[in-house]
Image (cartoon, rainbow, N blue to C red):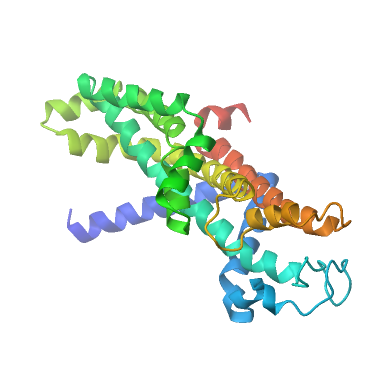
Length: 298
């Protein structure tokens, strides 16, 4: 069979597999609702620079009445400087989502590499990797992230690194257990007997089998990263950019509760809740579709 024909068959199989996946995913109403909400949030964050710019977060740009409640002119009200909360929430979504996605990606990559390596290499290397993982597990991730961010300095990059390098151990243990299950299958022994090396086995056999688990785990990790970023920002460790977490911190610093400015507290909090819930719904739906046991149970 020629290389072109082989590629055509492989592409056809991938298309059929994606079609089955999409058909099963659409049956989960919660997952579809979460996917639509995420699509709206991501699109709004991407198109924000087309309609507004970073000046909406500057204290000198506030032209409205301080602590003005929601109205037709200001649907989400204003803050202590007269800035539009609607525009700040819209612009802040870029920082919150960016840190959430990239921190989760870093966490998943580290957890995947460590988990597969620890499951594949059974000797001293695997044992050492698991001891390192256990050490990170017992550390309080939030406090560790605060310390790292304080040491590295406040920027978007350092916040991403601080969250990513403190949240990977759970993924590593999950991937390790799946790697051990995959490598116990007979075709792995046949591959080794035919001369398959470590790279061939991990990339051609192990990685495709743990990929569905990684996909479902990624959505949950993004939700966790967004919450962690918001918590760090509220505690004063931020990227020096407007985000939903820094808005909550500002509402606390300027006494929004004592001013009766409930909108300045509730609206950023609802944005965090909505996005985290959307990611969680997508993650649960992906897990149900990609996990054969859950699919049979359903």
